Length: 190
Image 1 (spheres, rainbow, N blue to C red):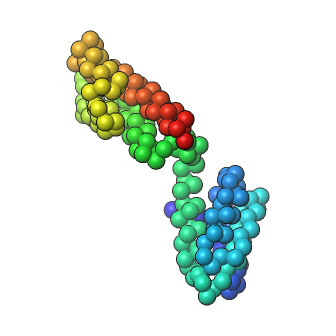
Image 2 (cartoon, rainbow, N blue to C red):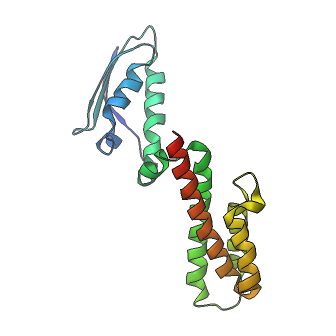
Image 3 (cartoon, rainbow, N blue to C red):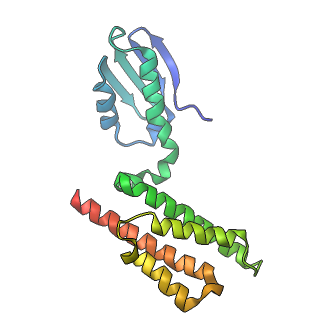
């Protein structure tokens, strides 16, 4: 596992850390404000170019180990940087739905790639159907009125059970469109 920071200087009341994730972050002022607002931390200075973070603190009010734990936890999430821009704009309640749908889409892609070589439905095809059904039915309140559920039922009746992978793909695509629409609506409400 990659370290989230390293200690360069450790003088009582002053820590200087090298945090590689600082180079990717643009919200340095917000990071500074967040750590500065902690009881016992007097000053925070961030130098993103050299990936440095200096923290001046009162050792009587906050323990150095507590500061290091917060820094480690805060910068550990940077492993998901490719998803940050997408996930930051999505309400927390909808993030699980998006990740679930992303996983299902990945399974569908693998199943389609495998299908060109093998014509008999296998365990992966059934896993795709189960994952798609779970993804579709796990969000929303009135499940029978959701567009993705209706699409799944209509697709099953029109395309047939012999093309279950196609049904799963069409249902999943409508689910993604619905999730994007829900995210757009919630952004307008904020």
